[in-house]
Length: 310
Ligand code: PEP
Ligand code: MG
Image (tube, rainbow, N blue to C red; front, side, top):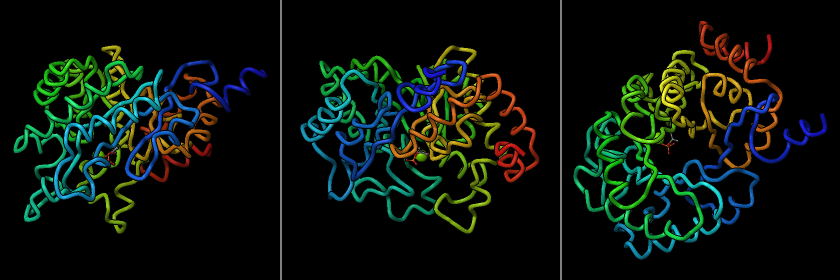
């Protein structure tokens, strides 16, 4: 019992019966990697590389990027770092990359799609990541944002491996990608669900529009069905399926996500202790039963109420 209590407060994430769930931190602009590395977590599940591109008139050079990645990988030596390639456009515009006159930026040339116009930027970024990863001691995985099709996942994975980086994945933040997660996972090594954008696109509701917060609620059972579809595809192929959107840091939702089959949760550093404690309270079987009940709920409020235990 003492070991179980300790597991609730320290070390790798696990359910009450010892099923491992990786707890990782999100790292973005304004956060020192050394501070993030001080958190009791198994690594970085989402490195928002936009942080290297913000507040400047042009793209960083390969040398600048290499130095920044070296610092991050050094801080996480011995641990995993999932690097997301540049996710520009829509809510993350960049002056040298995004078209300010795009009529519908959230549905436009953003995320992985910016490589259509500027393939050299992705190539330079992968070169810098690969150089910095070499000999760093960190386990570096690379993933692309805003992928919609298996063909995009295959092209990205080939490009990543071409740079000598062994592990390539994609984010799942477009409903088409969730529905086709099996084929996407056949084309790459892992996926990570970006629930912020997945909700935006599932409900056709601007993620920044607070008036639509009820539609963007991560407890919407239909959104969780997209998570379940993705996780089931991962389990069938024994490939990791993480969540790195805000939903991953909700201690009430974490057991549900694990019950749906999610294998890692990446969140703001401050959320890690509560999520670890929440997982330690339930067995995997209890998480699965909870997930089934939540999926069957008629709406988000009812789903949340089920998780609250009533
Ligand atoms: C997401 O969309 O859920 C996500 C993790 O990416 P971002 O919030 O950076 O778009
Ligand atoms: Mg996103």
